[in-house]
Length: 110
Ligand code: SF4
Ligand code: SF4
Image 1 (tube, rainbow, N blue to C red):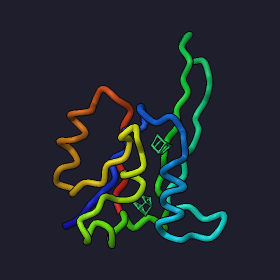
Image 2 (image 1 turned 60 degrees about the horizontal axis):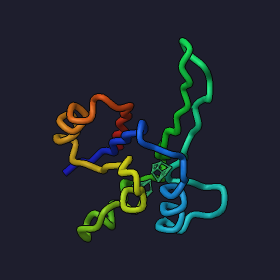
Image 3 (image 1 turned 120 degrees about the vertical axis):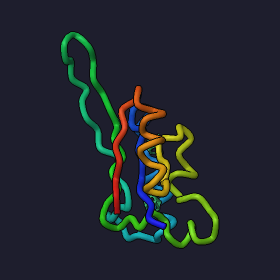
Image 4 (image 1 turned 180 degrees about the vertical axis):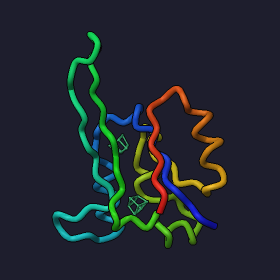
């Protein structure tokens, strides 16, 4: 089964727990990241402040293939208390995106 990562970044507070949990899970050397939280803003657009944090997986992300095989959640998903990250089968992705369509959502495919 093929999986992808859905990121409901409208809920992200930029705490970086996903980054750290991935580095620990993958035992990555300093300076390498499986996922990185990008900051956009703050800037005022149309009289309203826009300020987002957007977690973006890198080429080192394998969607926690080994953990998934063991029936565990991906490490970043498990440690995100805001429930921003969901690794889902591709055929469930569009339905889930529709359910949360009032938020800012990004979708990453392997
Ligand atoms: S995705 Fe979750 S764990 Fe990562 S920075 Fe955002 S709130 Fe924190
Ligand atoms: S799914 Fe696994 S490998 Fe990918 S960013 Fe999350 S913790 Fe890292």
